[in-house]
Amino acid sequence: MSGSDIINLITVFALSVFVGIEVISKVPSVLHTPLMSGTNAIHGVILVGSMIVLGDAHGTTQLVLGIVAVIFATINVVGGFVVTDRMLEMFKQKPEPKKPSSDAGDRP
Image: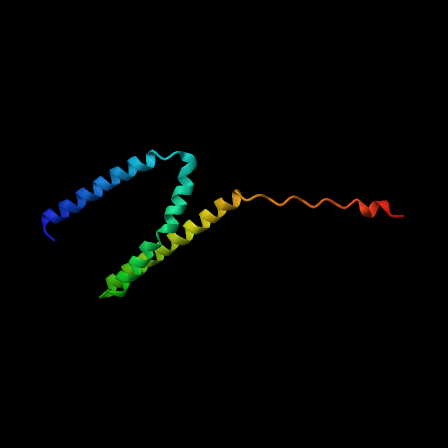
């Protein structure tokens, strides 16, 4: 990798950080948690990508980094589903409690 390639990668990274901050700052706080939990659940693509890279790993360092990537991606996906499920539970209607029947008290 040459020096210009590294500068290009750093430039893309810095610009993506600024764009990410601008996009996230425009999201209302009420929508931030649902948006992030849904995004984390969709990140299953990252899990698949990390497993593909792990399958092509050569050497101990690449295997360790691949395993760490798979673990972090799995935690991200599972956490996204858990948070999304908990939020959806808040919007479900609770069943009404059953009222005792009045027939039992009328009989002698």
